[in-house]
Amino acid sequence: MAKDKTSYACNECGGTSPRWLGKCPHCGAWNSLVEVAATPAASASKNRLSAGVQGLAPASELAVLANIEASDVDRTPTGLSELDRVLGGGVVEGGVVLIGGDPGIGKSTLLLQALDALQRVGFAALYVTGEESGAQVALRSRRLGLDDSQVQVLAEIQLEKILATLDSARPAIAVIDSIQTVYSDQLSSAPGSVAQVRECAAHLTRAAKASGTAIVLVGHVTKEGALAGPRVLEHMVDTVLYFEGDTHSSYRLIRAIKNRFGAVNEIGVFAMTERGLKGVTNPSAIFLSQHSQPVPGSCVLVTLEGTRPMLVEIQALVDTGGPSPRRLSVGLDRDRLAMLLAVLHRHAGVACMDQDVFVNAVGGVRISEPAADLAVMLAIASSLRGKALPQGFLAFGEVGLAGEVRPAPRGQERLKEAAKLGFAVAVVPKANLPKKSDAGLARALEGLKIYPVERIEDALEVVRSL
Image (cartoon, rainbow, N blue to C red; front, side):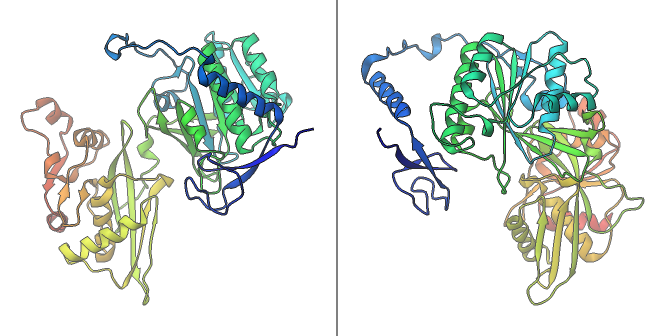
């Protein structure tokens, strides 16, 4: 019998190496190479593929881009409005979605609810479970109130049997829970290994494109919160979603990291109830603390998540530090916080070099856009002075190293969202000041006093005068 040839594959980039190395030669990740044993059958399959590349497989016909007819993608709503928002309007025929999240965050619950909603409007739905038995899935459906659900369930982890079921049943949508449990007989490595995950995901993706069945792959995440397995898995699929949230909180966030059929960084908000996950239509209420009176160190920001403006409270605490003061941020970039403190000192004369500075975004949301700079700096100054910002106050804008306040994208939509929620005072970049000629916008912003500023010292002066 021929001896199996052993190679090593990287968990991060999917690259291979003939021998084990401490550092991946392709992406530079440390301790990411794992052993992969190729069977003779797999080697023969690879040889046949090479022969086809050399000329046995016919090439597809060339086409001129201008002559290709472009058409809109048809979408099927899942019945869960927040999930549809993240997907770009619904499920796409033949689309492949990868969703990841911490264990127990609610991935299986959400997908079971979506399958049931699609089945009730006439779409055949299949739930392939590799981590639970059919009885356990049925028990969850009873807890969710889906007693008469007609969703088909298959408890199987062998790829070939799953593909045969997809070919015979021809469902409109299928969920594979999870891709790390699926294995193929063509490979000798264990389920969850780099080779198995990559090969199984590739076969399922080809099956989805060929049959038109929309497939949702559930993926595990690493300790760092990234999807487990090779990064090439994210390139195979059409959409990558991350399910976020604190297991001790009843709120969950689902974020689109990649979407070939919609906007990226779109966010959906759910509340975990006894009957499963329910969409939250006004997520701004989650990220705003309820203070009976204004408190120092609190400033409301209008951030943009995909196409949705949301109001988030930024809280700052400045306290006397030791010889090595701490800078800690939760939900915001720590390096950017250090930069903002330097700008605040150099251009506005607010010194925090001997103070501990703690900044937090309320509700566990992560904010990556630079439009949060102005709100963070005003919250820090408020905490340092011990004076609260006025009731109904908000701010947004990027602050540069020269102290200038740069405009934020889609500023008018941010202001309209703030006015709709009853805010009265806004400090914004001068470039985001609404045009007086727009009568409709003026009516939408009625009751909101807007102070345009060009520099950070101007913003602090406006706050002192209020």
